[in-house]
Image (cartoon, rainbow, N blue to C red; front, side, top):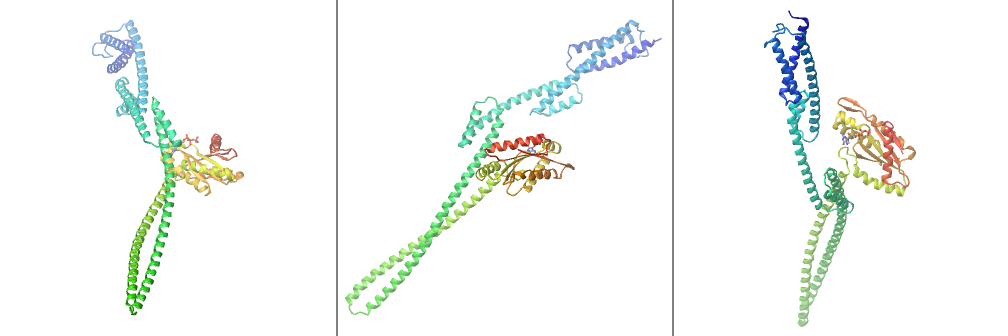
Length: 495
Ligand SMILES: Nc1nc2c(ncn2[C@@H]2O[C@H](COP(=O)(O)OP(=O)(O)OP(=O)(O)O)[C@@H](O)[C@H]2O)c(=O)[nH]1
């Protein structure tokens, strides 16, 4: 007869054995450590005791022998110990999995993502056994290290190539000096963290240098054009002169021939033969002169032809030069336009600021520098995507252009920031158009992902004051913008 007590021991033991089997199975899959081996041993010991008690074919309703109270107690203790151990094992596995997952995600953040790594992360997230993935994860880590080393050597090669290219550059003045400074940095630096920034700065300098060269060549072409015009005028004058010369000669020749003819007629009617002979010889000489004149005339005519051809060539050259100049002008215009918003860009702003600042210094007409920055634009990008952000930038730029006066200068300063130069503005009324501008932006009916979205902007503005430089005015406007942002955004601050 089985006691109630023993029956519950049997049930506990049955579930313990099931837990133990699971534990043993999982331990067999992984490289077991000393503790796991001990757990295996005790688990096996318990199995032996179980077999001693109930035989090989365990049936909880038919025990082979009745267990004593002592044995039951002992088994209960072992059972509790094993439960604790299994719990510890589970926790340890969970921690290991989390750590491995973290390591795998960290590796994935590096530029060495591989399909293998993605698979591992997927398995770990789906509660796969962590130790099983340690080896492939280590392989990924090694791969990342090798690639990192390779990247370093690529950076070194890039650095060397950059130095070679710099050698080929031929810029002078400020640009030349800065390029030289970067060259020195590249030659002396040991790590290449600054390489991307240096490359970027070099590209900016080359673009600036190019722009300067374009301006120079435009000036050169304008001078060339003037010279050609000069030559052209001279040629035209020569041709006119030549034509007049020929006409004069022709009428002179005709008159001379007429005269000679008359003398000839007179003389043939004279009886004194001697005189006739001498006059006849003079007439012959005169005829010779006329012949020479005719040849001269032919030469002059040829010269005139040559001059006419020259004039045509010069005209064609002049047309080409004008064409080239027009192309350069339009290229220059394009370099000053922001490709996304089609309003002026930073380079155009720099140039215009210099001009307006000089004008302001002499004429002292009020000049306002206005900085406008879109509020929480990162959120727009993050929530609706970069393309939606681009669309918003285009629309806001158009609103700025359409809502300001023709004489105002609107440019994209960079990112989501715009600058407006307001000329001849009434200082007492500056806030009015700017407040209206904020209202207009707020009321643009943006619609992204079928959702009505309101976008606002903040403005920091300032009027140029005596003693100002371009930088000090821009800094003051920037501080005002900062205050407008801090005041809750969609605000105007005039400093
Ligand atoms: N779509 C798009 N986004 C840009 C462009 N240039 C800059 N941005 C984004 O503009 C955002 C500017 O973010 P932040 O400087 O944090 O400013 P903000 O989110 O507008 O916040 P506050 O200015 O403080 O109101 C960044 O997400 C940039 O990626 C661009 O040409 N197109």
